[in-house]
Image 1 (cartoon, one colour):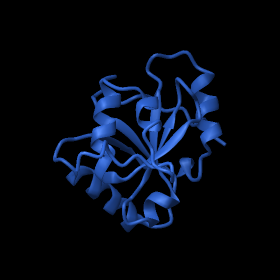
Image 2 (tube, helix red, strand yellow):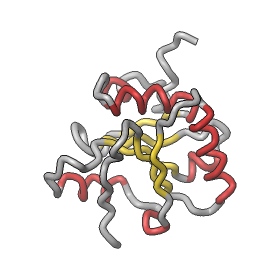
Image 3 (cartoon, one colour):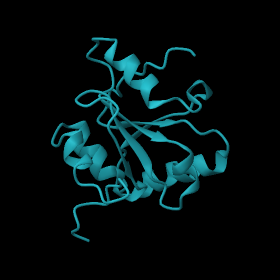
Image 4 (cartoon, helix red, strand yellow):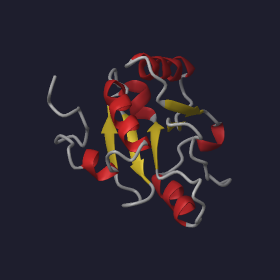
Length: 143
């Protein structure tokens, strides 16, 4: 497999990496849902077939093997579950503090998570520790 190394976005967005290429309309729908969530840009989309079904292990291995400050510290995967579930739950993957730790976040909560991670206002663990029984972050319970 080709190198999976990705650079961090140069703006204050988070990377959403497409890993399921079975339904282009679903991918467009996921992007539209994220973009419409609060009207602000929160995502840098990567849709490259070389990432089809990329494993979390491959992502963490690549990121931990480098010492470049441009590397990602987390990534959101648009995988099969994202493309098929009506809430479009992205898979958040920690690539820095606890490489390989994951949680799901429905697209409606993505902007909150992305914004806080991108400015280092909160850590990955803050969200991962606040998941429900299914491993999904659904906000802080205030709505």
